Image 1 (cartoon, rainbow, N blue to C red):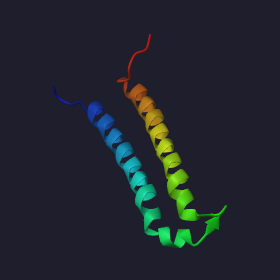
Image 2: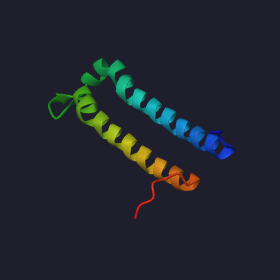
Image 3: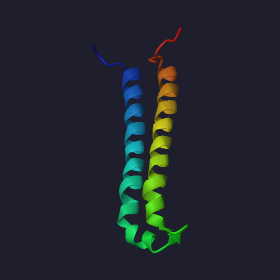
Image 4: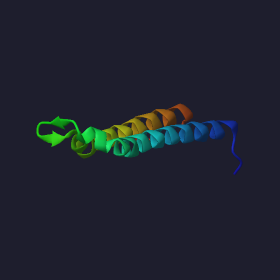
Length: 87
């Protein structure tokens, strides 16, 4: 099967979306860890702020990343006509 220009455009946009969301995942996962010592100097409700960032902040961002991916891919699939057809 040969890829048409439309197929290439679809995969280019798919890879761009995936790589940008992976970059966001990397930033959320590893950058706060680098600053964990500084974050732990700030106390919020009796716990260090680093605890809140890692225990509650990052999982929420992960859920947002998944939601953005689902919505963007559904829109991309509809635009290029490759989505699932529901009855």
